[in-house]
Image (cartoon, rainbow over all chains, first blue to last red; front, top):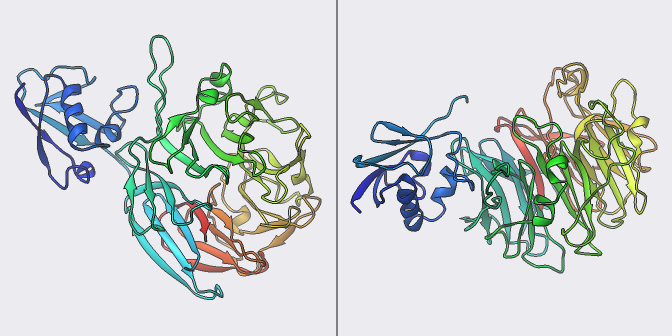
Amino acid sequence: MIDRTVRVASPLRSYTQGAASVTAQGDSVAELLDGLERRFPGMRFRMIDEQDGIRPHIRLYAGTREIRAILEPMGAETTLHIICALSGG
Amino acid sequence: MSNTIWIGTRKGVFALRPDPRRRSYRLLGPQFLGHVIHHVVQDPRDPKMVLIAAKTGHLGPTVFRSVDRGRSWTEAAKPPAFRKLAGAEKPRAVARVFWLSPGHGSEKGVWYAGTAPAGLFRSSDGGDQWEPVAGFNDHPMNAQWAAGLATPDGEFLHSILVDPRDARHLYLAISIGGVFESTDGGRDWAPLNGGVAADFLPDPAVAFGHDPHRVEMHPTQPDRLYQQNHCGIYRIDRPAKAWARIGEAMPKAIGDVGFPIVLHPTDPDIAWVLPMDGTTVWPRTSIGGKPAVYQTRNGGQSWRRQARGLPPRNAWFTVLRQAMCVDNRKAPGLYFGTTAGEIWSSANGGESWRRLAQHLPEIYSVTFAI
């Protein structure tokens, strides 16, 4: 498996010791997230619920392709973007 | 070590620390700035331990733990989560941890958590690892008990009460769902809603589907429970199966709708409520813009207005169900927090009130810690 870049939104950087970008390995989004969880325990559950659903204010992109389910493959994309989307005050 | 009033808000955790005579208070915090804090609860069996029910606007729910009275925090290794469902089962995912209750005095390290959507969870290691309570979450009736009138956030499971005489005797409440009781440590449950109105339902005479806002068990007389419900104030003295509507004795112009109810620490006949406007479209503000606490000293036979020091007019705040508490003094101190970010306190059982803090974020919980 190749190293891929994961861009981490600021609300999750308490898990990555402040890093905005980390590397992980995996052919699917799920595998990348599992890799992140091994390195940064607790991080996955804040983004992905216990039924493997992407939480309402989290958006995942493989490159520029939005991910709707974590079993989707990364394909040739080298970067997973984790975006936090919130409105209101 | 002085007492602490923990304040959970929509934007973080604050604390008030009084001097020994409760004359001055020091505001501490924020901690967890920006986090949505539904409950901050100290462990009476181990006062150095404090648990927080948290999420953020973006991120999923979790629990933070302190073993040094809130100076430092660690996240639960395994926060409350439903078991992974398969097949045709309706998937459930915890959206928020809403309520925390320490377990029985003999079960050090045991905690219970209530969530939205309604789920019951148990930890046996001081809140680090949480497991679903299958006896409730997978009860054959659960889908009906916990899905009567799903609100946009899902139902809230709250008011988890442990009988101090028997660790296996538990109560919980679901808003909307009703009050439920277990006598076998959570393996089986039964509704306990006799006598409670559910006048928002097509059939008000239902066994469950009620809307308890907060239920309290008296610590020295655990057979006595009080309930502030969407449809009034109630009391039950077990083993009775039916609640009595003690809110009927409230002034008709005030009514008996509210979120919190709190009890005197030693006298089971004394309780306080904070009525809100439950008319028409349910403003849920203080009635007429004139906030007031009401106290009963006779188990709900009569109620007395306690508003001295509170704003006499133009105060349209709401006090949510976890946002009122009593301390452990002989002359109990009372505290409540408002959706407008104010903390109000009485050092004389509600006779007079003063504001201790203002300009905080929307307050979700106010709890007393020794």
